Image (cartoon, rainbow, N blue to C red; front, side, top):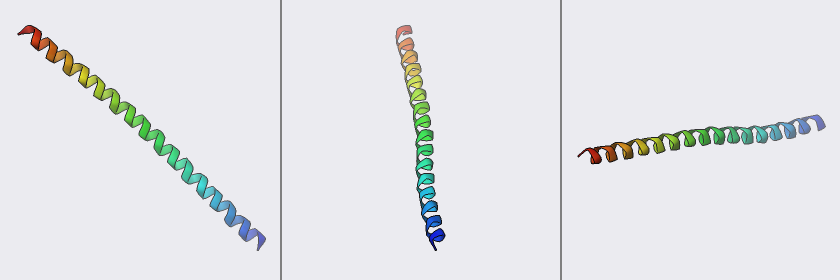
Length: 59
């Protein structure tokens, strides 16, 4: 019986570690996605600003 309980304790610890690792992996992917989206947004804002300023100057 001691082996039975020790196995279940180890598996629950492994399960907790696995969920923590899954959470950290998801956070890393979310952070990468957020950084990419922010860069795209900033680039589009700069392009829009340059185009609108150029059109205003040519008129």
